Structures are given as C-alpha cells and as structure tokens.
Image (cartoon, rainbow, N blue to C red; front, side):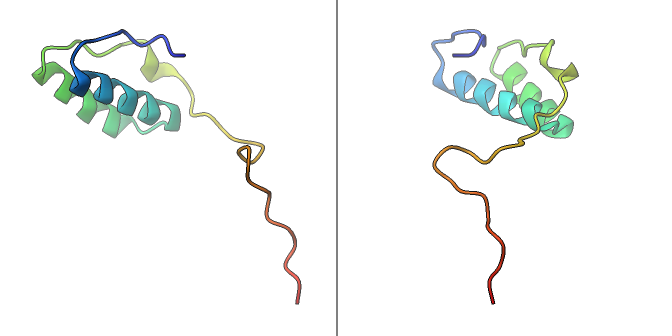
Length: 72
C-alpha cells in the first residue's frame, strides 16, 4: 500500500489519493490546488512528495498488449 496518512474523513482520503496521482505525473499546479482543498478541510498536506520526478512507463500495463505494426 502507500505511506499516506490514514484519516477518518473520506473526502480527505480521496484528496490525498488524488494528490498522489498528480505528484506521480508531475502536475504541480494541480497538486497546489489539492493542497488548498486539504487545508480548507483542516488537513495538512504532505510536503515530501513534490520533489519526486514523474514516473515513466516503459512497458504496457498488465492485461494490455502493445500496439502491433499496422497492416494494409
């Protein structure tokens, strides 16, 4: 699982998951917006995530196939 803090508030938990996704994709402007919403709900956003580089995928997800060459 993840090392995100556990919370009783489902909205805060959803915002933390959403934030983790934005951090993973390097979407800093969206991370800032989610941080603002967390503060409005009385939760302190994590500070160590923003320095991570976006994850790059080199293989297709499980259950999917890479696109083959086009055939005429």
